[in-house]
Image (cartoon, rainbow, N blue to C red):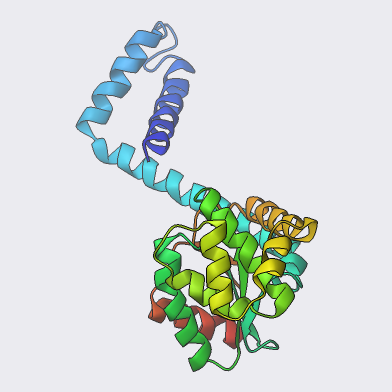
Amino acid sequence: MRTARFVAIALVLGIAASMLAAGPVVGADEPKLTQQEIEKIVHDYLLREPEVLAEALRRLQQRQSAAAAQKAKQAVRDHQQALLSDQTSPVEGNAQGKVTIVEFFDYRCVHCRRVASTLDQLVRSNASVRVVYKNFPVLGEPSVLAARAAVAAQQQGGWPKLHRAMLAYEGDFTTDSILALGASVGLDSAKLKTDMMSPATDKALQANLALAAALGVDVTPAFVIGERVIRGALSAEAFQALVDEEAGKR
């Protein structure tokens, strides 16, 4: 916000200064104003009419938001394959669903944990919805370990159970705690440990990080619905409204 405000001030000052410096204000024989005089005129004007700066800031923010949204939309179009059809990304709901929600999440993110039940309910309530999960560990090494385990669990067909076990887990994610969780849901701990550190797991996680960067995603949770990139969790009602909107386009 502070940066945008400074830019807005600079725009106002720049426009005013260029207009005043362009030539004499009263007559052809009048001398041009000095830079100091121009700045004082603009300064005094902004103090008298602060709504001018507020309007400039509002318009600047609108332009920046529109530009960011258009950039994100194009990025989504450019990465449809990675978003919708990546075989290493777990899918829940209707695998052939018309509406896809892609979530970038971190197992240690409290907001990701809270929104998980909302997504589950959305899937239960909408036969046309599929959810694609993208491991995006941004909260330190424990998050990376959990993400590795999630990818590795897919090799045993045990991702759904481990996924929910890790979302519910209240302790610190360590190799030992994750292997214990895996065993508790029926996974082969030795294989899980090996697959966690495999080149295939590295490749899957790196692909997610690269995709997030391309989309401008730097927080969790983040969602892609249609051509929208949404940062942060939404309410059940907001998710449903977006699902209905996307379903209406099909």
